[in-house]
Length: 314
Image (cartoon, rainbow, N blue to C red; front, top):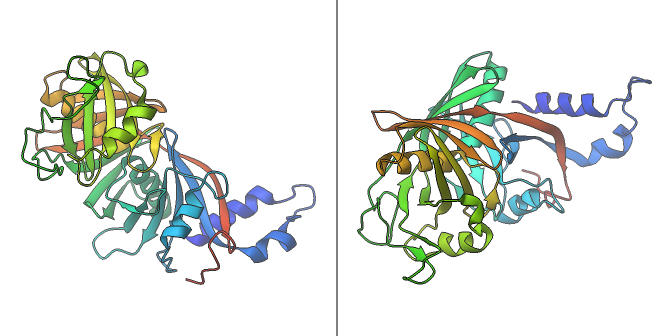
């Protein structure tokens, strides 16, 4: 996904069809020098920047500015593609607060789709902070990602102290009538806590999400999922993502929910997991790796202005 691809997409979007030229080029082009593509997986949206040939050492404030939905482009995560000696690309994931995340399943599918189109291939390997992720074209507009092994030990999550990750000692509300309690902890490249409930729509996730994200038992904070078992092969869930809040979908959270459900004996090792934005197919293989399959979409392409980038010349 080189800069020329993005620029072509942008130019195609603003060409005046009747006159064969862009009526805006004299006013816009001089100030737009940082191409991006806006993509999403089930509504979990990303601004994708290509830094493989041009360094983009984004500061915290620049990342926040880009992610801001009122004054920037707006996204759940900012994705920066960098060179890699070990894979087709290194994918750096920035949260809306500017900090880095270890993994993002939906973003991995989005980037994989672009790289496959660019390389004319049906398989790519993407390096992240969490490790190497292999992605394949599953056909019919779907892409599969091997999210790696599910980490289940307390110090792999990590938790603040040694405890059973199948029954983590966390709850919201009084002992006599807790609102949420007894989650399963799973690490899918990043920490997750999964609470099973009878009705996900009855939980005020906007209130309990930030409380649980910052609970002392999660020293690196955690992504908080509430899950409802529909059948042995179907789960309904909602998610509160670290720093991003409620999102329409989270690939790694869907993986964590399936693993948690299988560990509790609530489902088999494969299920369709439905989030607010749509459905992902998740499978927990016998070798411990978690496979995620789902769609991707491109919303639009554009350029970031010098003003938004804070005058950076990187």
